[in-house]
Image (cartoon, rainbow, N blue to C red; front, top):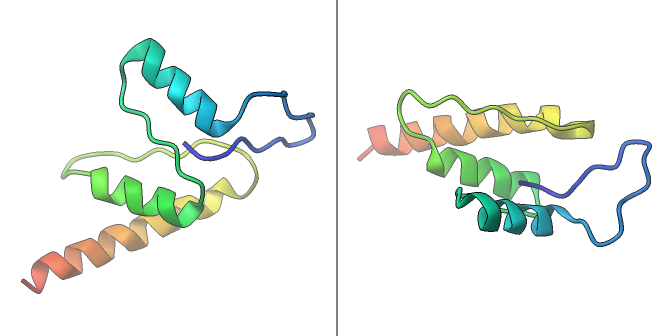
Length: 84
């Protein structure tokens, strides 16, 4: 989870991506990780991905840039594993 992108809305005081991720973890017991940058999000998603997984990105603003970044991370990981 990244920071909250407020399109044309005013930010909600006291609510951040980091706090939201923490609350989701607490309430659901699910694994949720907060990251502060697209580069960290791409690295984290690629590191967690396993064969057969599908990665879905949701959001507003420039989140559409994240998919290609994740694919690049996955390609680099695959190339590194092939070179072992």
